[in-house]
Length: 285
Image (cartoon, helix red, strand yellow):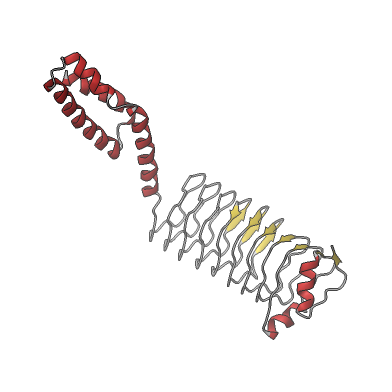
């Protein structure tokens, strides 16, 4: 009868073999079932009755095994996506799913991450210059303090992405909606933004001198204490945009900003006036 217990358990676990946690669950379950069977026999139950009661006692074990197997595979994938402090220059990650991946402190110059799902991943302290992130999902990705020169982000998903303090010389961000993205304390002067919209983006303390936001839609964007000398917002649409600046140099820089033909809400306009800036030829709505 114990062989029949083994056959039953083997049949249940057969589709999920290979995961260590599943194998451990199987061994524990077999030991418990054999013990339960012998207890029932000691109570006077015949073999068939003891077998049936033993199997009935474990309930819906198939669902439990399936859940353990799924969790095990998720954890195994997470282990594989740790690439901290590795040399992956020119690496091919195109189209891969690497959620919560760890690429911190790695050499990734020229790597191809196009169309990859990198949700929640981290690249802190890495060299990612010349990398291709076109079409990649970068939701919640941390790219702080890294080298990203000449990297491309055409059609990428940029939501809660953090570029603060990174080297962005020659970076191209095109055909995308930037949502809650951070560029705090970052030199953004040589970033190319093409056909982008900005919602909840934070440029606080960053250098944006002579950047062109002409014709762009900006909503709830923060430019507090940013270097804005010569920036153009010609024909742009500004809603709930903040330009807080206490130091004289920031106020003076704001007076060089080109708002010609821009449309803005009353709060944005009032905030500029409070700083001594009264844009001419703008539409206040």
